[in-house]
Image 1 (cartoon, one colour):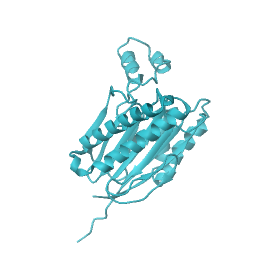
Image 2 (cartoon, one colour):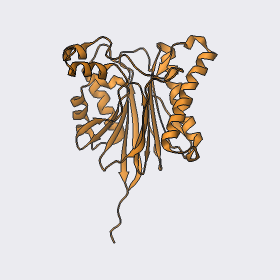
Image 3 (tube, one colour):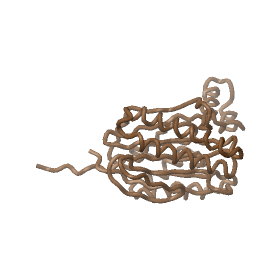
Image 4 (cartoon, one colour):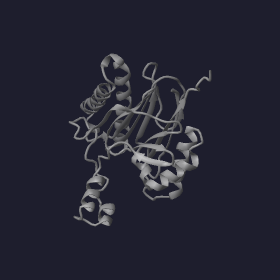
Amino acid sequence: MIARFVHASQAITGAREQQEDACAFAFPDARALYFTSSGKVNGTGDLLAVLADGMGGHAAGAEASRIVCRSFIEAYCAAGPAAGSDGRRMRNALDDANRALSEAVARDSRLEGMGSTLVAVTFGARGVRWVSVGDSPLYLFRNRHLIQLNQDHSLGPVLDQLAAAGEILPEEALGHPRRHFLRSALTGAAIDLIDLRSEALPLEAGDWILLASDGIETLTHSEIANTLARHADSDAACLAGGLLAAIEAAKHPHQDNATVMAVQPVLAAVAVV
């Protein structure tokens, strides 16, 4: 049985002028706690983790991610269990966050064109549920294996399917200039693609769940897995920091903002009779 969740976040700006990612943890049955770049919070009970990666350039991208992150958490926490299933509660919070973007643009036309990805995860006794829009990955690291749980709403998977079908070469798919273009994002308009997992995915002892912005993809899948394996016995802050240190060590000249939120369940001790 899960007793609590240890969790932390870390972020780097990379080669960008400013941080356009926003992330926050909250306890839905208590007062929400917010932070956007780094930090660590402790608590018991169910946990909500939200990460948003803004777009729109400079202030608009940063504002979009803050709006989406804050609005989703406020809507989800305000709804409470009476809102129905957790899937419905997450979908309603997603719609509220999207609506908040359109309302912000209506108040300030300088924000026109801003948008954000979103990945939000609820952690409870039965496991994890999530909703995501865009290309911010959600990972499960279990027994030294890394699995991406959510759908990638960029053009990357489409190009990979074309390569698998023999319509383009694999190297063309990987190097395509539009590979990272988004097919879905929160912009205040209708959302084209939504990945909603309403049935809980059970967690096991030793599991790590990671929410990340796409800046983590400077590292390959195997590099992420190997880095996690080296830090799997560390605390959440060290594990998230280890990933970001590996990204910085790669020295990519156009490194995007990168944010990692790390969460691990702590199982309750079983009494021996």
